[in-house]
Image (cartoon, rainbow, N blue to C red; front, top):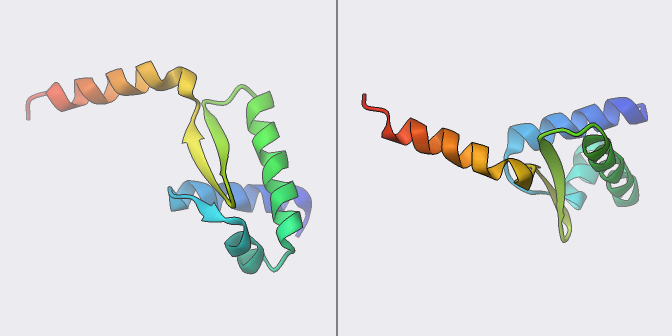
Length: 88
């Protein structure tokens, strides 16, 4: 699998999973070395930060998770707060 395709696949897995995914699990699923998994995730994370995306790739010890950029927290909070107050 080419690097760009691997990054896209990692992105899809992170989005679908919603929870942290370990480096070892990514390496196992994609049949690559843990080092390649880390390199690919670091590159994907850099891509998100350079594009000014509202999403970020967070590294949590030995795992990764997709999250929202904290600078958008007030808008996220306001959006879901309004949703909760809307009568049925």
